[in-house]
Length: 385
Image (cartoon, rainbow, N blue to C red; front, top):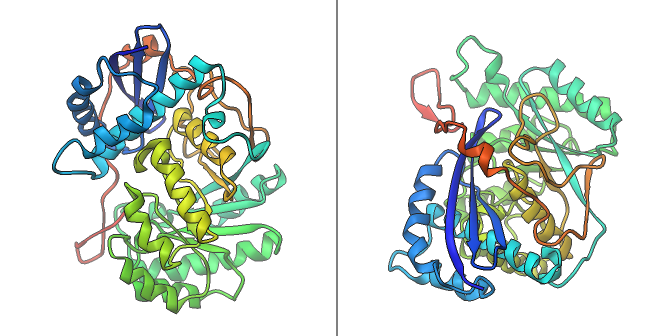
């Protein structure tokens, strides 16, 4: 079996964008992959076009060797654009191999270690009323883990203005109220999406009673491990870090120094299933669970389900299709996909990834690149979204 072609499909789904790829072979078996670098699909397509001549004619079963060739085959190794391209290719190769052997991808990773993959619900809110209603509805539906995504600035006339100190005062009060409303048995985490500084993060934690939240996700940027190491000494709740990491090397200091307690690995950015399994092993050796990042479509979800199924150190998978704000799994694009059953994905025995993509429908749609919002402070200075 030889690789004969690689096709790319940038698409708009819901209010966002995704990049799906198809790796074709001379046997008629094909594999689906996806990039996680949302908002930079055209850049990833460019990288894949560079890689395509290296892949045509290669045996798709040699997944590890292909990964090394793509990652190390240029002087300037790595980077998020290149690893997003490698991730998409790697995932597609696993899909091909699973289909060729008639087994689900997790069988290629050591076999099944769980019968279902538990998820957390993503709760995006801009008011206290919205936070309480969405959260209570989800708890009533059986969800026992809520990851909060505050967007209180969207309730302002100027939705592009964000003041960290104002935000932490408001959100601390709202989250304290939520804890009172849902009780102690529900796990509550919060994603401040790198909008804070070290001092602001500490102040935020001090404004809530102890035990209000169970973890905080990426309150500051992650480029500097020492900054997070300092913050680790200041506050006493677990961190969830790593959704932007593009290799096992980026994870290394956060795992070895126990800076993060949950590894927010993104299979579609870190280098695919091949690299994700290595990060999972590193994390296991340090008693750190995976909490995979998963804000995109059903192909990324499927790849992560197989990773979670084959790893002992797994906590929750991110699920964003839990409210009115986000739709990433449009069945017009994805007629076959893994289906939630309550707050979890059952593990199936479908060969390959267990997902299919309607390329004919996709090619009829016009793609529009999507830019993330830009936020600024009152004085006009730029801040993170």
